[in-house]
Length: 290
Ligand code: GLU
Figure 1 (cartoon, rainbow, N blue to C red):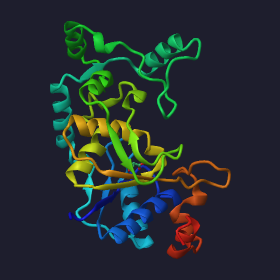
Figure 2 (cartoon, protein in one colour):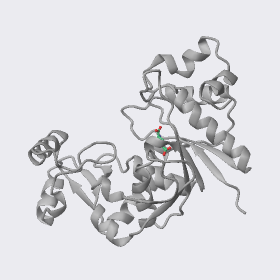
Figure 3 (cartoon, helix red, strand yellow):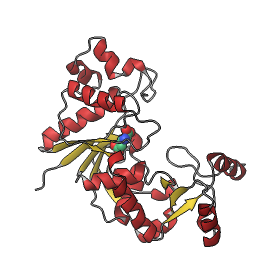
Figure 4 (cartoon, rainbow, N blue to C red):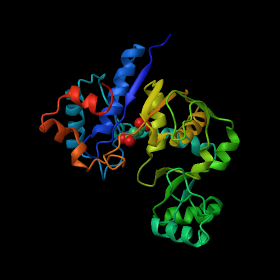
């Protein structure tokens, strides 16, 4: 049997906190249990928010926790050509269209359609894309592109779901409502997600799917906040003929008030805890790994 491959995939847009420690340690423990390999991936496509000093801090904090990963580390910013190629495949299938509305225009359209509060929202609570860029005439599209207008490249999710229906995944952990085992993917709940922008040939969804396949990741251990995003990932995997990993979504570590941890909250930052004399073994205890 092939060696199972795991990955921890933080974004270097802040310092790691207890929630990251939990996710990284769970991956590390699974690697040992399964006799697998652990990869580290730096998800740094958002150039406006990612910083080299945060990437350096990720290596330092993970090593301090006792986590060992394979090198070289994959940094997404170095693989834009891979994402562009995947985007071109989806475009060739006729499943991608440019949408030119600004954020403010989108907010206005939503407000107009949501007068009675019935405009659908995605699993994260954001309104679905309300525009009709999908039906723009070719000439108008070409004119807008030639004018240099900014745009987002969106997936025609309805058409995509027609091509590959009945998608599922094997959930070894649990979703927010206790979903476990074979789960039905519902990508249509996300509407026409953004796959790329004029200046950036990728998005979180596209790069995560391309990278997991490229790196041969077989079991994805990550926070439950990404459970519903898995529906989009399964759709992209099916459209791009990529292998299907199994997923293990884990509970999120919360602060004393029950809120999701944030990178700006100092009380739960690994740096602060370390400076205050907390040991790696105590971090394990704090996240309930004993
Ligand atoms: N980069 C994402 C994050 O830091 C995780 C992506 C994933 O595990 O799929 O939240």
